[in-house]
Length: 172
Image (tube, rainbow, N blue to C red; front, top):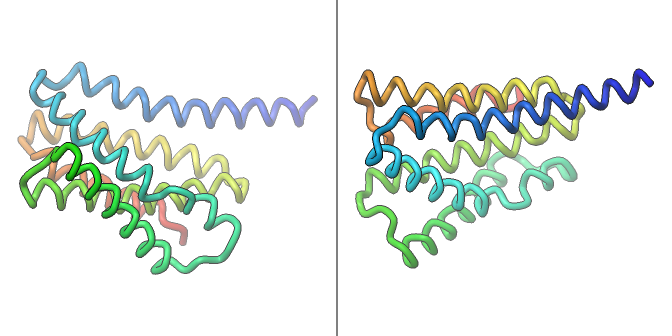
């Protein structure tokens, strides 16, 4: 009976962590005006597509075989560039080199951190996984006051958030 309680607790914690990432997206809609929220959506969902294809399969691969960080980084970067190139050809979401670079830097660090944070699940470090996933949400929520109060560009804030999460989430 106690073992089942522990499993339910783990499931609840994992659910709360995943829900925190969705809550973050909902809160953006309430704080930004229509134009800022539209820009955020365009950037975030473009990045989500690139991250999806950039980290495709690597989160499982690093749990099965010992792959060095440079190889994973190179493979993720290549996958990301191909995915973004496809998006750029089909929809041309961004035209400025600064915007494109910002999104690609964000995608690279989120992909790499996501791969290694996901690895925590396979090593049974559920608490660390939950804390890092909630930290992901908190760091993204810090974008709201940075943009509204400090007038920071979204294209500056996103790579900083991604880099911080990567530095904190990278295995020691």
